[in-house]
Structures are given as structure tokens and as C-alpha cells.
Image (cartoon, rainbow, N blue to C red):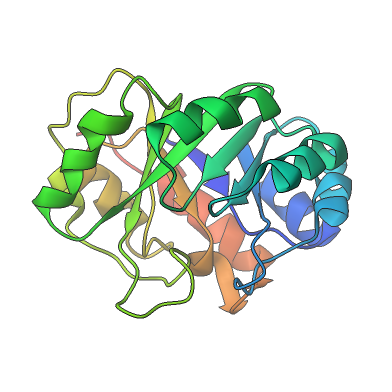
Length: 214
């Protein structure tokens, strides 16, 4: 079965719904421009409730002070870097996570996948997300998709997650097109920006569980 990262969780109810739906990873966004932003202290409280999943702190170009705050408050299994972090910064940030770094790569066209050569083996996992609209104030969480088939024949040395515009109606087709073994969803399980919906969380998991092997 395709593994799921439910991201942008903000409440204990969100965490409970994600766990009930079989989440492998639960993600917490620490970035004030996002409607899914939570403070480091709240991220820590939610991560405690999420025992049994691997916790992910999602940040955009964090400085050392913020990384230290997250480490102390949350002790995340993973740190997801969703900004313009250099390979050197990825290596530096790894010291603040228990398992490693997930580096997000924005995708709109095939040329965007050139970044794979830069971060493969540097990051511990990669996440392919839709490139943000021009002039956007945050790099992700817009609910936009792209041609998932661009990822089909990637040769990577690390695991990766498919993200960007996924919801219960299209996730099975997106997995088939991309060959993804793991997916990340946030806006596709919301009733409004930043407001998770337990029924949509379960529907997303059910759509993946209903996949038929190709």
C-alpha cells in the first residue's frame, strides 16, 4: 500500500484523524505565511499526540535559532526543508532531526528535475511538489498539480514522496502515473485553508487502499 504523509496538521483532532487513516508521517508547518502555521510549542504538543507516526517539521529557509527551537520543542523525526536551502544547508540542518532531512523540490516542467542531481544523496528523502504561482508568499500548499508522469522514470538513491494538488479524487491516478510509493497531502484534505476535515482524510486513505496493482 502507498504510504501517506498527512501534512499541515493543527489540532489534536487532526492528528487523531491522520493516525486513524494510517498515516506513516504527520507533518507540522512552522512558517507564519502559511494558513497551516503552528508555533514550535504547539508542534511539540501535536507531535507528542502523534506517537506511532514519524513526525515532520516543515520549514522554509529556517535559521539555526528556529531549528534549535523545533529540536527542543518537538524532537522531530524529520525536518522538511521547503525553501531555497543549499545542499550545504541541508547537511547542517540534519543535526536537528532524529532521522534526517526531506528536501522539497518544486516542479512545473521537466527542467525543474535538474535539482535532483543536486540533492540526491545529500537529502535523506525528496518531496516533489507543485511550483508555487508567480508572486506567491509561500512555496507550497496551493492545491495545484502538475504532470505527475514526469517523475515516472526518475533514478534516485533516496526515497521520495509525491505531493502537489492531490486529493481523494485523483491520488490513485497520480500514483499510477508517477510510480510513487509515498504521497504527501495537505490542502486536498481541507474544508478551508488550514482547516482539516476528518472525512476527507479518511477518503484520501480509502482511495489509495482501493488501488489495484498495475
